[in-house]
Amino acid sequence: MMNIGIDVGGMTIKSGIVDENCNIIETLIISTEVEKGFEKIAQNMVDMINNLVKKAKLTLNDIDTIGVGIPGVADEKGKIYFATNLYWVDVDLGKILRDNFPSQKIYVENDATVACVAEHSFGSIKGVKNAIMLTLGTGVGGGIIINGEKYSGSNGIGSEIGHMVINRGDNFYECSCGNNGCFETYCSALAIIKYAQKLVEDEEYSGKLKGIKKEDITAKLIFEGYEEKDDLCVKVVDRFIDNLSTGIANLINIFAPEFITLGGGVSNSYNLYIDELYKKVQEKIIFKKLPFARIVKAQLGNNAGIIGAAMLK
Ligand SMILES: [Zn+2]
Image 1 (cartoon, rainbow, N blue to C red):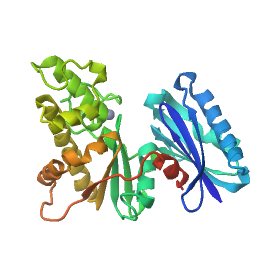
Image 2 (image 1 turned 45 degrees about the vertical axis):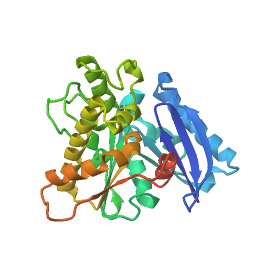
Image 3 (image 1 turned 90 degrees about the vertical axis):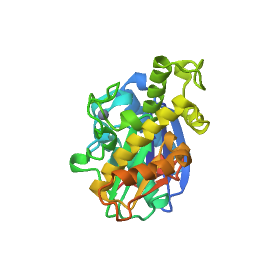
Image 4 (image 1 turned 135 degrees about the vertical axis):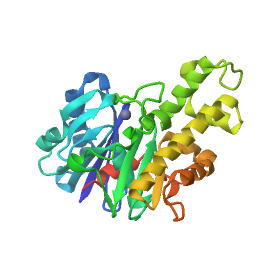
């Protein structure tokens, strides 16, 4: 039997058929077309699944499970409470998929949890008993493995690590969830960019980012500036590292995982900040005498979303 994994992003929806050995044997990608709304996108997903099966010269009888990773919060039945970037609120993707594919088991999960499942199956945290994944992208996503199993909490809505408040009321902008001080408003790529944009405006500064249009400032540029010891970039990245260490120290104090793995775009600069990060985490954890979690970089690239979704159970 084979499984289908679907990775729903803001730009594209990627799907793949994955065999028993976790090899992707066929893929199909469509545009998300966010502006057309949930009903149309869900119908496109149903069509995509049928076309994918056809493309692989299989029938639905060959497919055991259909798993979907979404950038939002879903319960165990696949009802999505919200997916902010897609403008979905209280939509029932699980029901639509079950109605169309009654013979398959349907799973809908948060995309960071899906990535974590893939990393745990054959990536940076393979076979580890207790681990946490942070995806440092547009937001900060969280995946939790406890005793070798993914943990999503009651009703499947836990693991929202990005919305752990680490500095109440301290930040200059509010989180998409409405709180001020969420982890992701300090440690996502967007957070890093926003802070750099603010400093470029606020401060007397004539370094690397001066003259670059505000909307053209990227996290990559900021990390390059950090490496070149540009004052503003150093200030931005130091703030990122300090807050990342606070979030990670909290997670270590609560979960004591063996591993924390960092994924998403900001993990590309891992080598630049890992030493400083370790130092600050060490300062902030409670049990300083015991060894604490190894902080590693995620290994799986673009297809982790498809494979992780196909492995949901
Ligand atoms: Zn938040």
